Length: 197
Image (cartoon, rainbow, N blue to C red):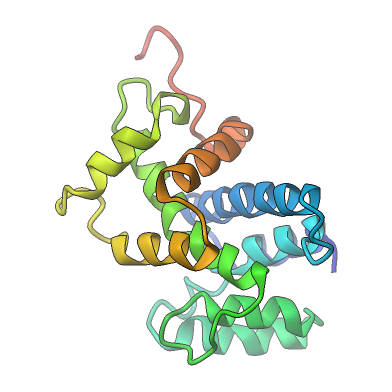
């Protein structure tokens, strides 16, 4: 499967622009990590495969919005579509309740980036210019302590994700911010025109 084919599946099943952008935000972070790990000599960090995994991780959310249907029932659809087992397993492992342990670097990276990408998007939206370019790790850590802010985002998953990946939380946050900055326009996080901000 190619990235373009994966995106077609996302567009087929996901009507919400916000959920499509979430898939793209997670992809931005996961792809950046694949590139990073590849530069460190990790042969298993396949940028195309990691992008596909990130794009597809929530493709079934609108048709299966409850656990454990998502992602368990979605996995069967992906299998029918010919998505390889390594990708399907990583998608299953991003759900704490799936019973699939996170073992591979891809699985750990997807989990580490999923909730954080959503949180970074939420933080961007409350900035004066609604831009990821206004977000920094220190501000994100402060917002994480505010239980009323973006309450749907599981802070424990963010902490656990960084720990499982073996990266410092502040470094992980900063890394994902930079990854999302590179695709800010596509993610709808480039900011408001000057006259509106």
